[in-house]
Image 1 (tube, rainbow, N blue to C red):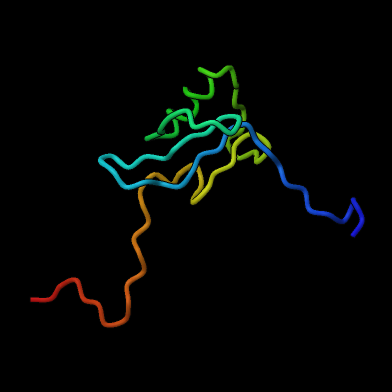
Image 2: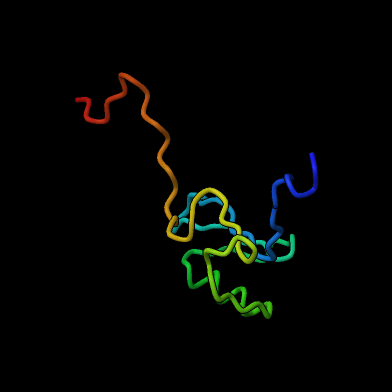
Length: 91
């Protein structure tokens, strides 16, 4: 495989991991590979980045922010898929 044909993998400074259950749910944030805290909303991501001297102009730019387990609008945990035959309204 030539260098041109190899896929490009970005290494953004900010990584927002998947939603963790809690009250309220949260996402763990990493900056430069270090865990820096928990974000409960999109504004928390921007405020934390600013506290570390990072100005974010585009939250959809994969070279700036990597969203793991959802995008910038994902702030609630995913429900596990229901198995066939499961009923939530059983008497």
